[in-house]
Image (cartoon, rainbow, N blue to C red):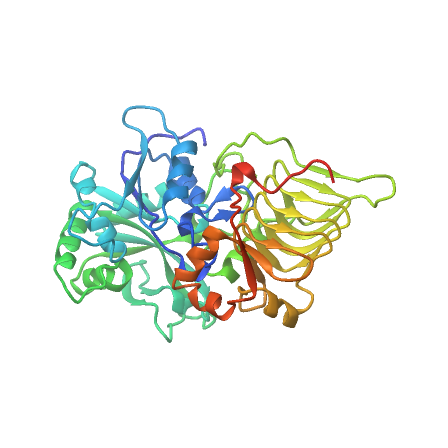
Length: 466
């Protein structure tokens, strides 16, 4: 935190109840904000770090789907001091009727008591499932100076990706004049046909106006009860003043001069994989080493990572443009553009290329992996090859990205040949989850199930003997 740090009493609501359907199978057993990222973090750590680093100390995290690991992570690792300073987890409670959250706006409406409890004129609402660094107090300053009912953070994205977001048009003063939620044919920015201005899903509302909008929306049976689909269009149509904050003007303390702001909606396996790749280069797109703007997470009791030569008869370990997290051991192997999570072990003679390997994985001697995404606690047995024969991989593995990245669910065991082994609990979850059910049905009879369930505290690696 910079020398001008001060406590901001504006309440911040973090929306962290998303299922993350397009991230399956990573999200069959955890909420999207709880998905690990960059080897040692969880996605939610980024928004919480932005909030805390910006001086906010009254934070509510709204949870719903598969929230156990998310709640555990926040309870164990995010503590604030002081009676008036807190990060409070707010599980779905059905306060407004016998139903779970129907949309982002309904999530806030069902917890409208939080808005009534504060005297603050402004309320911040931020998405809990994006990767970015954001000094959000600068956005609030614009909101208050403009006198807007709502201020939305905006950022240009390639036109071919804009259909995934709310697309905005603004006038010369930055005031919103048009909003389309996930349009089939997004309108490009004036003078730039290659990009569209989209909503980042981060808002500052005038508190009383927000309560009025939510109350009106709650009784509208035709509403999807969503900020992008309903609340923003209704406010705009009613003549409300909506300002757009240019995320490109945001200045995060400690960032290098000329740094381009970074924001990624890691809502698909492809975008999640790409974002992991973007943080491991010599000049990473998002700088994890800014001491004035630390990304906080769990402080684990693991020893330092080791990259060693197994013996005099083996070649030295080589790691090129890779990140290796605490507790990992890499023995006489080659890592090329690899994200290696904490508490992992790579045995001698392995070749790992352009892969994301989450914590607790064990890669057997002589294994070769190319463009593979391993969830936590997977075990790849000696001599196994993945990513070199697409046709053979499609016969052997149930999950792939559109570009052919092989995705292994948590706890998967991959023998050199023969069927893979899934843990009993993961297999059961994936067979009934609508986002993985079809893939599992098509794969029926081509995998085994084991009763042994690996957990991070009993992980499959490291094993210090090779």
